[in-house]
Image (cartoon, rainbow, N blue to C red):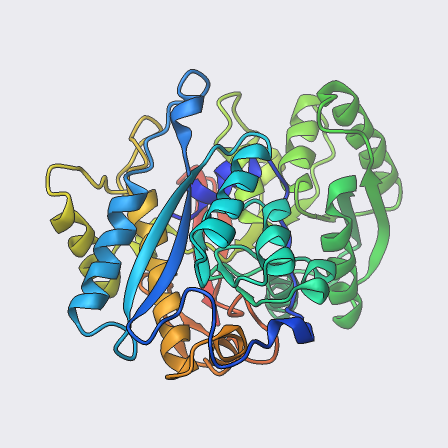
Length: 422
């Protein structure tokens, strides 16, 4: 699932996103860089893990093959409004900033592509949408970045600005907060998301009696665990019996309760599935008491959803046909030691489908302005394996897509899908 790629990005940078803003400089005239009457030149960035082989052993599959196969399929069917898509690939070392900067310069200045799909870390985006006015697909922007952007961004993974209100509304409607004294905990890097959570809880008249930020850097694990212990004591003294753990705290809070051998184990609601899953999947083990009644949500569809949809099956078959000797492992039956070879084709399937939908909606005159307008006109989009519909209107450049709600199952010893919203 996409969390494999998201997890890679999260290992080297924090991500957050809100809505789009395109300045006047983004409204190009009838012609656009990378667009001719017969072609659309598109950049594709992907994580080049060759430099990290000694540190991590990950096989995400072949990104260039996956994207090329899907663009070839589009071209074989007449292209997009008669234009063939011409991809240009750039591998990016995910450590540091040099690789991303080089890729941006290559694609925007040397190859002069119209748009870029693929792998981005949040700091990389300014080079494309702000400095060069080139649209991107595959990363969400912060509010400040979006306000300064000269080109649109689109993403198929819901960002916190849409995820948090949806999940908090769902939990409120299900009565999760009813009769509870709620504490909210976050880390210093989760301040933007904390503001979203606090606003959503106020809107639902949730009884928040304590709110705390663990400001200890995550590089000092022992001190951070100790600080969570101090916060837990304050929460317990205030009678908090449900804790909303924001962002990274979805991993840090339960791990700290376990590490401190705390007998105080209030119900846990984590705002990010990936963070709570990181705790439950930790080789050091987890505490059933800490996880009792735990809930979380996320926008990344579980493998059981995306892998088995007909559109995704068809897309993966197209990729496999282009490289029949390669294996695309099954994420549903995968174990911790299974290569994540589905990551590249899955990512390509989402992003190429979204790019094609937006470019078609832009019409015959394709430029940055019409691309932005085309994306904003899409209100009932179905992407391969998405698990629901996407609505990009009203500034929802992340598609305001479906949210997947999970609950902790002691019997399954796992977070189990409970429902899908949207």
